[in-house]
Amino acid sequence: MLTLDFHPTGRHFLQIPGPSPVPDRILRAMSLPTIDHRGPEFGPLGLKVLDGMKQVFRTRHPVAIYPSSGTGAWEAALCNTLSPGDHVLMYETGHFASLWQRLAGRLGLVTESLAYAGPDEHLPHAPGWRRGVQADMIEERLRRDTEGRIKAVCVVHNETSTGVTSDIASVRKAIDAAGHPALLMVDTISGLASADYRHDEWGVDVAVSGSQKGLMLPPGIGFNALSPRALEASRRSKLPKSYWAWDEIVEMNKDGYWPYTPNTNLLYGLSESLDMLLAEGLEQVFARHQRWAAGVRAAVDAWGLPVQCADPAVYSPVLTGVITPEGVDADALRRLIHTRFDLSLGTGLGKLKGRMFRMGHLGDSNDLTLVAMVAGVEMGLKLSGIALAGSGVQATMAHFSAHPVDREKMST
Ligand SMILES: *Cc1c(COP(=O)(O)O)cnc(C)c1O
Image (cartoon, rainbow, N blue to C red; front, side):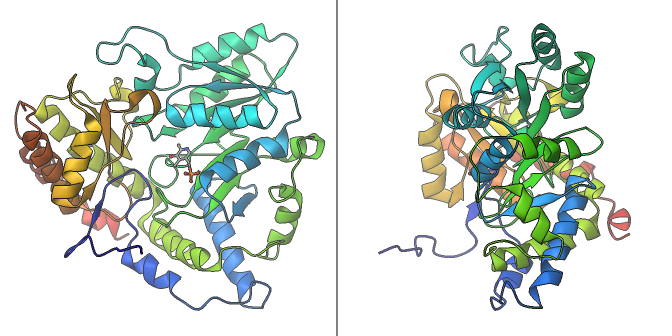
C-alpha cells in the first residue's frame, strides 16, 4: 500500500526544480467538477487558457496544449516539422539537452551536438554543463553547412539539470548571421513563467514547455508555441504523427476544443495559474525569481561552495546547483536532508551524479520558505561533516532584508 503518512506535520518542502510546489489556490481550482469536454462550458475555458498561454509565451501565433509531460512536447516539436534522416544540430548544456538529443535520434533524425570544451576547475569532465550556449559555435557550424543539411537547431533555455540559462536571442542572431534556414527550437520547460522568454521577439520557431515548473501546476500538460515557419514546415514534414499533429489541434482550438479529451481539471488549474501570473505581471514574476535566486546564491557563497553555473551572466533564476566537495556524495547528503528535515532537493543528473545537488526557487515559494530551505540544507551540510566557511542562512536573510519587494509596484 502507498502510504503518504511519512510526513507527520507541516508542509513537505518540495524544493526540487519541478514539479514545483503548487499554490493552494490552484489545487482548489482543480477540485471543481469535471465537465463535458465537448459541452458548452468547455469552449470558453479552452479559449481562455489558449489565449493566456500566448501571453505567457509572448507570441501572436498558435500554442498547442497536450495532455502530456514535457517529453511529449519535445517529440511533438520534432515530429511535426521534420522528416526521417533530417539533420538536427543540438547544443549540449546539460542532461536535458542530451535527453532531447537521444529522443531525436530515436525518431530517426541524425543528430550532432556542440558543447563548450574549455578547461574547468571544479568539473573538468563536464565544462559545458556549467555554461550557457556559445552561439558563435552554432554560427561557425552552420556556415560550414553549405548544402543546407541541418534542418533545425535545438537549445535548452533554462537547463534544469545545472541551473544555467542560455541566451536564445544570440542563437537566432547566429542562425541569421550564417544566413541559414534551419528552424530554431527551444526547450523552455522550466524557463517559461519564471525566466524571461519572448517567442516572437527572439524568432523562435517551436518552443516546448510543461506545466510542472514555472506554471506552478502538477505534471501533465505539455506545450508547443509555434511560428508561421514552423506551421509551414509541418505541412511538408514526413515523420509519422497523429496524436501530436498540430493541424487538427490548431483547427479545433479555434473554438476552444480539442480533437481528443484534454485534461480538464489541469486546465482549471492552468486558468488559475494564468490569472495569478498575468495579474502579477510577467516582468514582476521574473524579477521575483531573480531576487530569490540571488538570495539563495548568497547562501552558497557564504558556505564557500561553488555554484554549478560558472558564468554569472547566465545564472538561472529558477534553481541553483551546488557542487559538493570532492569525496562527498551529494545523493547521500540529499537523503540525509530528506530524512531529517522533510526537504526534497534535486539530484545530480547524468554526468553530475553524486557531485552536486539542486535547490529549486520556483512555484509556491516566498522569502521565508526559501530561508527554511537554506536552513535545511545548511543543517544537512554540517551533519555530513562538510566544513562551511560561514552561515548561508544569515546570508540569505541579509539579502532578503536588504532587498525589499516593492509592494506598491506589485499591486498595480
Ligand atoms: C522537466 C524538464 C524536462 C522533462 O519534462 P517531463 O515533463 O519530465 O517530460 C525537459 N527539459 C527540461 C529543461 C526540463 O526542466
